[in-house]
Length: 81
Image (cartoon, rainbow, N blue to C red):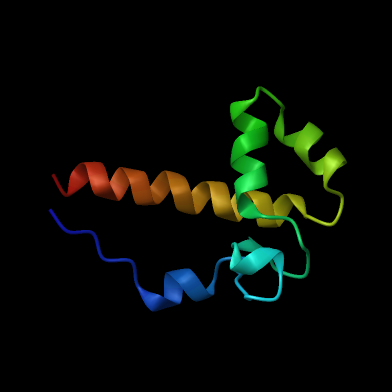
């Protein structure tokens, strides 16, 4: 079982990592908001709207792109088995 994620797919994500920003954790580009905050907030039962209200520097488009990438990657993983 092997899943290949193309470099282009990664580069199109609205995330970045920098050791000087949040200790290198993946953050939404142009912010200091860790991508993990989106997952944690949704897991805790908040809606996407509530997350965006709590983190106004993150755009809806950024959040949707990350969620779409997660969904399609998991689908591809399931299909590769």
